[in-house]
Length: 95
Length: 249
Image 1 (cartoon, each protein chain N blue to C red):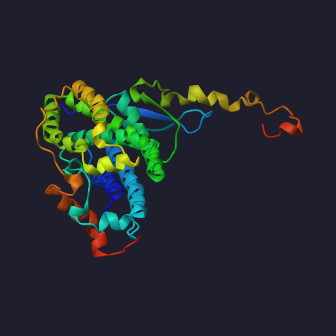
Image 2 (cartoon, rainbow over the protein chains, first blue to last red; image 1 turned 90 degrees about the horizontal axis):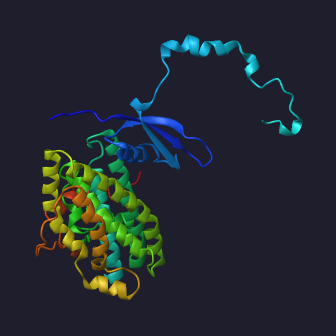
Image 3 (cartoon, each protein chain N blue to C red; image 1 turned 180 degrees about the vertical axis):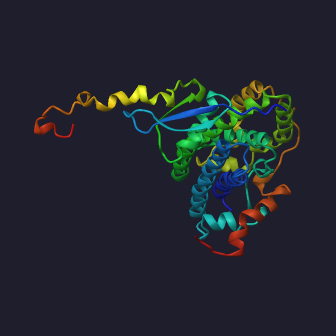
């Protein structure tokens, strides 16, 4: 018998309304409905979520780890890109 | 035993015994994801049992708590339907049984949410959500395995042929049903058949599985007459309380 592995799915959970979906792990499932079902069973047993996204792992386009120098290092010395040079009024202290 | 208590035990014992059966999969399911899923369902069912048996013990008023009801009664005192005590068989047979019984349970909880017994109505309102998911989870598997490979289809059809005769008991009328119905406490199980059919038959069809012709066989677990499998199940389930009475941890 042909024993193919089920595809890998990445799971994203939103734990409260208004927040964004966060990656929380991955799992194997034969198709998208089962992936959603498995995600519910594996990752929301302790009230972790109110919404689930599943995405087939091979549908994710990822950056090349070897390209780190050219992609991310140049941002290291661009301190002026952070909005930290503005004095805020006391009333909005915690922005 | 009053009809009210008898009726509660039929429910609480059925969920308990199916929960026990499903928990046998813990650590043995074909994939990690299903291992967790089956354990989740088992715990839901045992949770429902705890509520129903605790309520039953109040109705009984004899000072037997949920643990005593679950672990210190003998085979003939259990009122679960025979379907839930049958051995699991393979994964396909397990999810088929789960699908058949969870669909019944979903309809039962739906009806009981309007019970004049407010304790039971509250349990039903909570439990129906769990059962809805159990139907969905098991139903998706029935479809995929029935309409899967030649091997999985053949196994599922065998499971349908073997389990189907035990579904007749779910809807077999009994005097207890009539009495609790008259008191506004319970629904008659026989009246749940059409709603059950409306879910089960389309799923079987989508799964390319055929329900066998009806037969005269009606199992009688809910009357306290069980199959040869029940004693073995209880031996394992009750071992700890019987060996170390009152043990807690």
